[in-house]
Length: 246
Image (tube, rainbow, N blue to C red; front, side, top):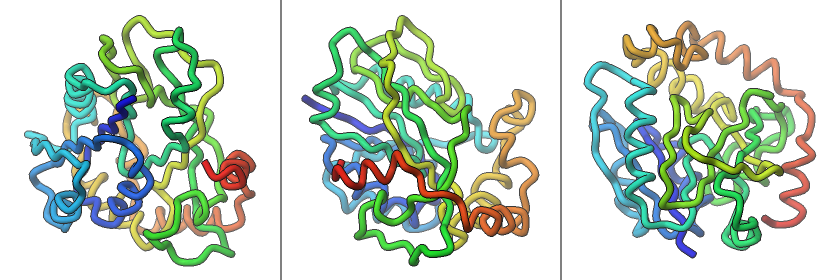
């Protein structure tokens, strides 16, 4: 079984080591890398033998419609048996054994992604410690269930944000679990969301209403959100995954 992860990145030097460690079990990680990236993302990615970098450019700022089209095109060209679509801050708890147990009739698997925050008891992030053992507190956004896993060599097209998928699909009834790290720690999320997201929104995003969560944020509002979640409950789903060493 061949498994490929497809992602799109811009200035993700902090998250990339976590991303590569988490998905180290797959055969290929294909990264659409924005050529405007000016941190150490390229150098970090180039050091990993399973990473395939494809440079691209957003002509008019961050355009979620163009991003989803480019990712869908890569999916169609993939020769993998399973393809995982994941942003740099999305960590899905899955492996080849679990994928092999999915009945043949299912072509798409949804992923239930929990919004993760730094708990008052959490230590600083460490790229050498598994994702699930570092951040286990947060909440589930009922709208954040995404068709992130698909059998390869089919005619699927993802919409903006990868929250929907077009094509003849038969979805697995039990979503897998994932961690959404957009707000996992103030040490990176403030700059990432304000400088790398809010300040790069394209006119197309504004017209179409894409990525609205990043339109009007400020450094103080992001920090305040982090502080308001410092006592969020333990996520039982993630705790269960940790206990089973998935």
